[in-house]
Length: 238
Image 1 (cartoon, rainbow, N blue to C red):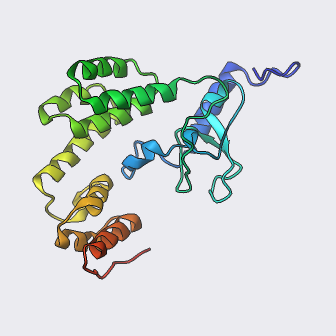
Image 2 (image 1 turned 180 degrees about the horizontal axis):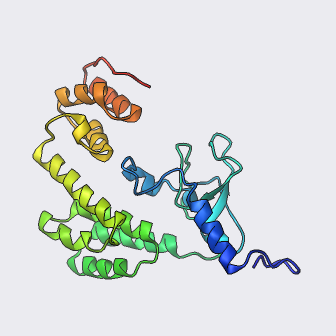
């Protein structure tokens, strides 16, 4: 329903089809190998240029009004995003939407690392209706909990792609903990980004500056190497 007298709008079945069709147009998919951690915090719904639709669809969809975004004037999903993101400080929806409040509560509980609080958080995530929000919290938890606690967090992810993503993140964390060896092609994009952003191994940074999987990784590694007082020869910037 649109809420406009004489204009009933799409039926429930049609709205479901709209939802499925628009989600398929997403720019950033959490299940993609190259999805970066910071994108969980740079989603359309919290961008200052986000204009939510009215009515029921406004809880998930809105129009981009950012003149420098490739999506300016287009309808996007609230969990999408782009490199032109600008923080608004809040999640924008036409009605009182509690997704943002749940997200902030989850993060505060995780940051506290209180044992009782974490138990309550796991129980809440088991019933969290927003699968992407649940997965984002699980991935964050895997980085901060002990290695012997990771499995119970993995099992909170929905079977299939989400659980596979959580299991892949644990493998990435094991690689980082053990000291990456081999060649960049053997590491995920997430692992390459983490190494490029935080490593103090000059040879590793040189390697990623030359052979990182993406332009962003190569540039990040080169900039970090330069900031450490050494100028590497950068690789192909295509």
